[in-house]
Length: 356
Image (cartoon, rainbow, N blue to C red; front, side, top):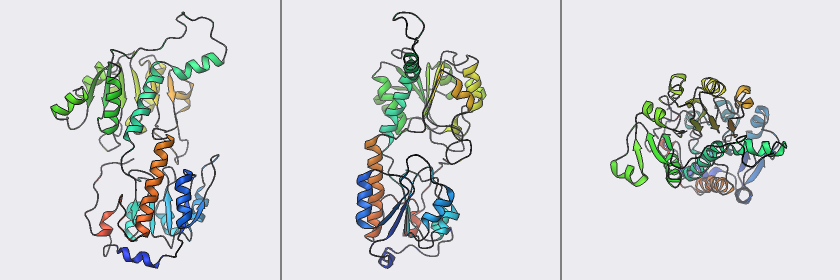
């Protein structure tokens, strides 16, 4: 990758006593206080808007350490604008929004956080599933709009989950968390993934393996949890959506491009699906026109959330603290624990299929 020699931790000795740190969004206060104790922090302290490209380029200038956040791209131009840069620490598992090759060519370590977010995302995914099945956001609006006139009418009915079949597309840590929660609801859980689990793991989780087409045809609820790779990009196509039952509900908390969003909207609008719960979209920040399509926003049988699958206070605090742990390790001349370009320390490069 153009790296002439492994990174040498002793080069940290050339850093100022209080390195300059740039943070492009607010972070949990405990982590921020830790950073202020070890460096001079410049924080873009706005919850009401996202930092502009120009503000990013200005903010990184003269900084030794860049704190990276998921919807702020640190591409090669941003990295080049930080002439004094020594470390990029991302509050993210894979830091796909950081140009890691560009950083590596300059000998700049890039760190992430461990994939300990799965339980939180699994919990959120289950909550989105329940909210969609029981039409909870729609019911909230129904009440606020003064439309509640009867208790026992069929004016507002949800979908019972107990005894139904849920199909999990992808069964990694997030999917396993969803499976356990669904089993607690006495649901039948089927799954598909590229490599089938060993029989003992299937038995422990109480799940059955199915090929994708069979899973889609059999499921009352379909939950998408795969990582985004070339193989899963566009996986749930118009053709695959046509395999779903008309009373099925689809939930996606993985990545938006896993689903053909236009085809999904058509299926929902035409009554070929009962509902959908979406936390991710084909276009997301920082892309233009990000978020769900106008058509999806019009549909009452869709629950939409703004990519908040890890947005628990406790989880975000843990992510921020781990990001600071990596910064502190680097400043101590140690190998950061969550290094994403280990070749700088003379190790084998990481291998990942993830594209988003």
